Image (cartoon, rainbow, N blue to C red; front, side, top):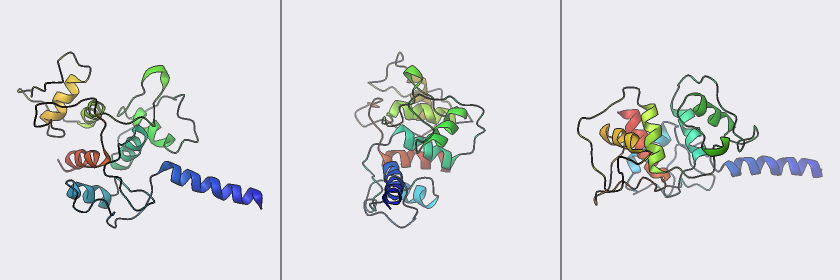
Length: 198
């Protein structure tokens, strides 16, 4: 009996731990009236993004690299040839398969020390890099937007310029891009909609 209860507890822990799976297209209570409501409804209806078991989408919650890998696996079908084994992504990790996929498809890569850092939040510069890898047309523009906080020496400069040129990402009214700012789930939904629709 004790083993049975422990088994049930572990199953619940895995589902809640992933934080992710409310399989329903019904409106989540925190998307109504949100500035990104149209994009949020779109990604939910298409099944690209899902909400949490507490009945919320988590619009203002920062999105993690593991969550992004899962969403990309749901949303795109790229050939995945080989992939790295990351020391911080064991086979029992809830996002193991999706991380293998994005790695093999070249959509996301690990970072220092052969680690993927699945629980680390995705930054705007990192998102721009993902967009460039998704952009098979290689959209470019002769005119490059000048952002006050993205010098040409910045590691993500080219990706940010391309993501801005193809309309996937924009800067802020004050002329900044905030490349190191974390991306929220609502912001990711908007970018995903732009890529899929555009």
